[in-house]
Length: 112
Image (cartoon, rainbow, N blue to C red):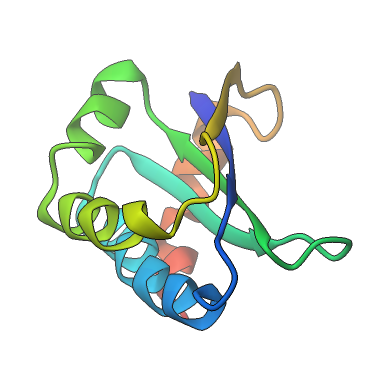
């Protein structure tokens, strides 16, 4: 499995809109993408203008497929103008849980 940790700073006045728009991408990812095993939206406690996304995918192909989904395309075109600076992204290999552990947790992600 691979994980992606994204850091996004949002311009003043767009926090609530960003949060609301991001739910659709997050929910669509875990609900509709078989290769997505986690999609967390986190707001930085020290700087509320900064959000972090933590995503886990089966592999690079699943992540590439994510970027081609309707919910991602809608999210990106909606929130892009609200970005304050460059988006930072770090790709990692997951260590724990095991790949099987990620797969077993998938059904629990649908209980919002």
